[in-house]
Length: 93
Ligand SMILES: [Zn+2]
Image 1 (spheres, rainbow, N blue to C red):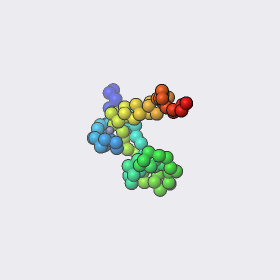
Image 2 (image 1 turned 60 degrees about the horizontal axis):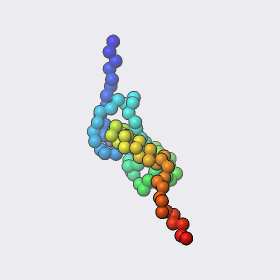
Image 3 (image 1 turned 90 degrees about the vertical axis):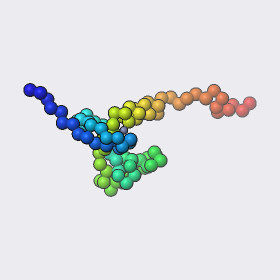
Image 4 (image 1 turned 90 degrees about the horizontal axis):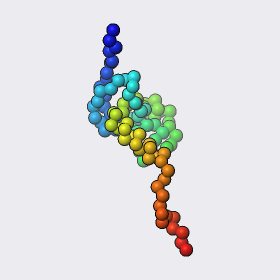
């Protein structure tokens, strides 16, 4: 008995590349089609309260492995301690 995987084809919401994915394993994001970002995010990347109507019109969009990889690296950077600036802030003798 062989397990058949039902693959789906979709368009990555970040790079717009078409890719094939396993719907049971793909990472999806809830995307507001009006802004192109998840409800609750502004286009500037700042948070704001998610409006119910924005959530209602949003759909789950798949994220391709490449962009997932980049997103994870970006998250790593966000979680990393801030860089040390040897001369900042200035001590101002
Ligand atoms: Zn992508």
